[in-house]
Length: 173
Image (cartoon, rainbow, N blue to C red; front, side):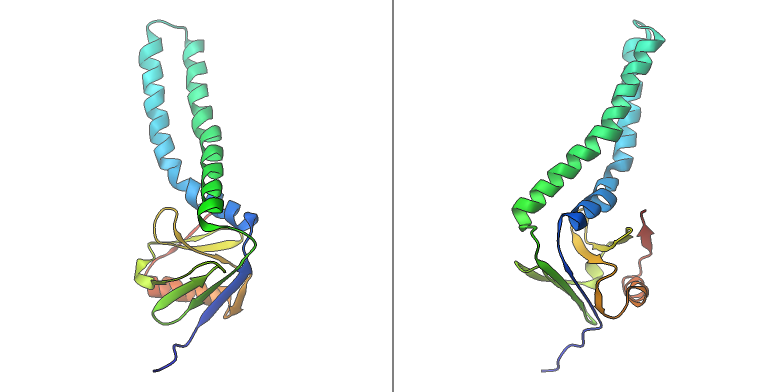
């Protein structure tokens, strides 16, 4: 049997800073468009209900409260919920996470589980200040630290992964 050649390797210790950046910059932002839509519906409902019965001050106050809930409270609540779920379900502790990239597969081991995915399963590439994420769906994917490549470099990896997946990287600051 022929040994598969690993082209890139990313190795780092997992921790809350990785999880928090992933949730804040990658997962929670997917709700942004949904929040805008719901916010506009809430605004319309507030205007319809209060317009004939209340002053403009009350309308603006209600609209401001809806905006505050959608833009401030919801992302914090959602972030805490996702982090708690990750801690419980995936035993997100200080384990070493290692990702290997060969010609056909991405293999990831986090000290607890080991899994492989094909490049064709990657739906989105997302870059944050410290992470590079290969997303399978809205909240599942492979998280890599950009400064933790032990085989290859981040720059060459980014070029390679964009080429093999036919996706452009979404940069989130």
